[in-house]
Length: 257
Image (tube, rainbow, N blue to C red; front, side):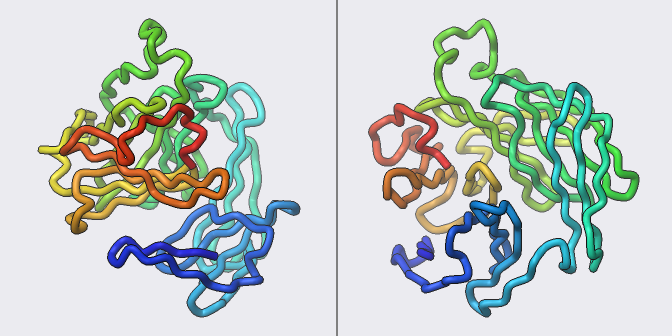
């Protein structure tokens, strides 16, 4: 396993045989959420203490969901210290933007699980009532998703959701185009630029998104990990300079993980 702390720009390597043939799905507070590539079983692992916790036996609330039919979502939850998952098909329908743009990553805030559908609308799952609900917010139309904007039609698109201290941010990417970031203020989404980011940095991937504030040399930027073909680095977009680093535009959004 390799780690790359941004504060000193050095690459560190750890010998962790426990993670062989596994994929990192999420990281937080020194813990990694891992998925075995073959069996698809999941577990928590702390690379510093080498402690491993198999799921579902853990001290947190877990959520997993999968769309199994029109208007039906198979939803599984596991509560504190529970020995097994509770699974049922719930009424819930996400609008897909296209075949590849189904929904964003999931974030946990305000005792709920939130995600965006392929159109950028916000939904949440409430564990106490076991109900999926639509969040009634006034959304801005993203030009990348418009069916009438043909110049973006064939470009790969992604949508990400992040939260910082209860404030939600959603971001749309489209090939090498400028990322579009919207911030939720009360019940209204507004597009933000470098002057409104206030030093915010967004780290994103297919599985999770994190935000930090006033990081040296990284303010008002978005960082995308590039992990294909033995390439391991982060490619940022600077809202201050309105360009990607390196300057060469990405030809394939699939390079973004």
